[in-house]
Length: 159
Length: 339
Picture 1 (cartoon, rainbow over the protein chains, first blue to last red):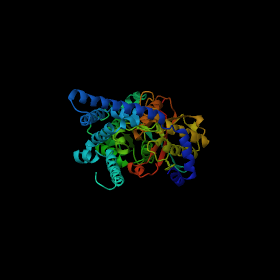
Picture 2: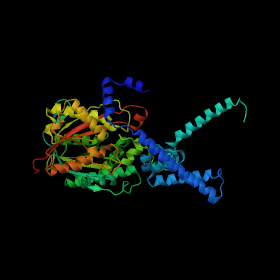
Picture 3: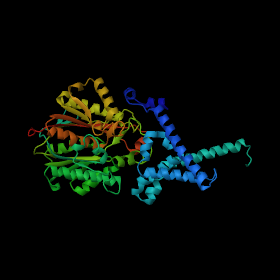
Picture 4: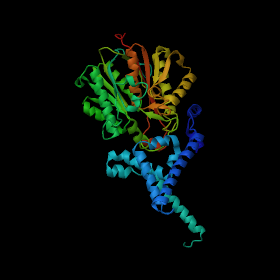
């Protein structure tokens, strides 16, 4: 891919891009990984704490506590998004705050807030899945493929 | 008057009679705060949307510039302006409010100097007595249009730039006191094949260098002719690349002071702006605010402002197109009546 892209460039462009690449700072990948690990871990720890609370104080079982836990995490994420904090946390933690539940909630809430000015139907309704949409689409496609593979390897029979 | 290949020399010396700059709260916390006319405490300016807030920025800047020039809006013959929004809506809505005959221009972040160059040309040719040049940008409306929703948690790379919330406007006149516009060089579109919209500095640097070279060649001058040369919004990454390119092209920049507006408006230590600032408002508020104030105080005699623009659209980069870039240079000198 990178080579294919390069072929289209003129020698001057190639020379310039080499110069630019030498000067511009790279993404600090190692630092980002460590921060993502810490932030993602902290988020999961909070999730675990919430779940434990539901199990010990409200009387849910380990299995049934999952639903209210996810709801609480979504709520936290949406509140932080609305207060304008989540995007700042994300700049620090990178992939750490993109972990499924809170990251997904943030992507939907932020798009809904942003496009409120275009109306409830076309703005919020039409744009809410702007970022989250592809995750659902390709998640479904992946589930479909995995489903077929499971069916094939289990010998074509039912469950 | 055409000089050389792509430059105009304004022999009648159009005067910048009055200027105004209006910025948001984030810019108000930066090191140039004292040079802005109005600093808003709320980035929404109590409007219903980011787009409306942006429109108010340029309306206020235009009205204040007219007032500072000692004029009324009926006396201003033409308004030349543009912005970053699709179909330059902010400027068109402002022109509706101002009801001044209007020429909409688009040069992305180079619009500040593009509009000033055209306004000066109109005045220089005797086609108007007073012309208004202005441009604006809003951080949130630009994020919304070109990138992600403002509150979306995505991590920006160190090459990314922060769009300035601000508007700058200037009244160009054929008489009066103030700094004068002496020449302008209109840039070519340069595309070095950069496709990353989070790396606009690197995309725009070659355009800035091309226009600077053309300016020196057309006017047959050296960089030392100016006390200060500033580029519009290359920021740290683009500025370093531009310095390297200028050195490579044997342009003796050491004769003068070379700076970048994108590196002046924010405080890198306390404000999270990665590479620096960008946007139409960046070069406009730095030039019409900070730099012209310095010139009025007598600290600068001659300066060259090279506003840079990345001419991408939200659609073009999603389709994998590279970023075409442009730069326009305008030289401003302290007027005779300035001490």
